[in-house]
Image (cartoon, rainbow, N blue to C red; front, side, top):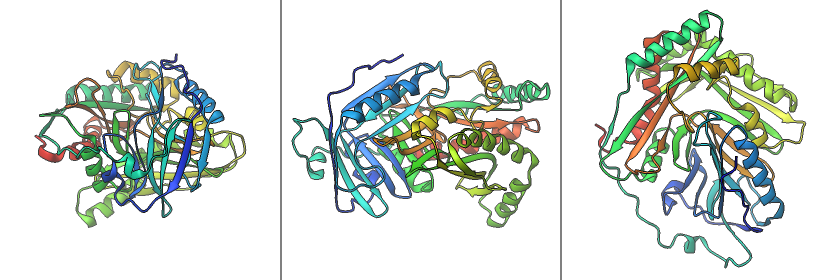
Amino acid sequence: MSIDAAAPGPLTVHTVEVPDPGDLLAALPEQGISWVRRGDGMVAWGEVARRNTVGAERMDEALLWWRRITRHAEVRDEVRARGTGLVAFGSFSFADDSPRGGTLIIPRYVLGRVDGKSFFTVVGDASTPPTSLADALVGATPVAPLPPVTVDRGDEPRWTSAVAAAVARIGAEEVDKVVLARAVEARADGPVDVRSVLANLAADYDTCWTFHVDGMVGATPELLARVDHGLVTSRVLAGTIRITGDDMGDLARAAQLARSSKDREEHSYAVHSVTQVLAAHCASVNVPDEPSVLHLPNVMHLATDITGALSTPVGVLDLVRELHPSAAVCGTPTLAAARVIDELEGLDRARYAGPVGWVDAAGEGEWCIALRSAEMSRDDPSKLRLFAGCGIVAASDPASEWAESEAKLEPMRGALRASLN
């Protein structure tokens, strides 16, 4: 079902090269959109149009809307780099029945940097006057420091009981793997300026994708699908161990993770689910024989980067629609795992573990899974809901999974660190 069905009139889009703006997040003049990794990427503000959708067809309807708009847009792109021209940013709910649904947003202004080139895009219509970057930054509001924040710990007995129940379901051969999530509430003493949160995330997790789209904020390490000049890439993460801060000890823990039969089993399910989808659209798919170990400041993950050359006329959102939900965030078999999640998890994930990213007029773009993230309240700017999830397999231990979920909450807890109570 569509909520905003009408497409705007034909859009005019102009992208120009600009001097390097420095810190992209620091350039955001208001609480806008972010898609930044290792200092590069895009920030955006203002809004020309959006499409809100709900239900099982939410991604299909958003994609049809986007295609209608791009078909009639007049684009003048003087840079021709990844992310230039007409782009939309979006996020979608994990579950089909979530009332949070999905959104695609066309911003008024986009400031970006990629491969050493900096660019500025203005989107409007035929009556929109020429606008410089300096003009677009007029009236910028200063970034508000974070007020003191209190974060709940969560209900450990209830969640570990759910994990134990999931292990029993796996033992009964109802499902092979299931991912269980949990949420904790955070309340600040005043409004939270998302730009402060983004700055903290980018400083601590610069190898992750630091994002903010429609109230969903985080720093995710997991790439669902990138399409760039016909090459598709997906990074699968599954299998986790906590960082201790002791270098020698963590090297031993990395080796332990790489050898762990429990973690390798969990990882193999996720790799298989992604490979199946990509193989249907690629002449060949490259899947490394062994996973690597990805080191983050809080945890280490088993990681596999899967690549392929597209052989069918699909765009990034087509692939996202087929890939979601992968075994990394749902489980396997998918329908059985989703049923167990509904019965045991006891929460609406909203857009946590759903796709988040951007798409351009050619159908290329970059979409991740919204992990290490929080949902900002639409009604109260001082409230957020933080999420974490763990993959459960036959050898999972409830206490260990709780500890892993605590480690996965650390990025967002740390990002609210002004006066964390």
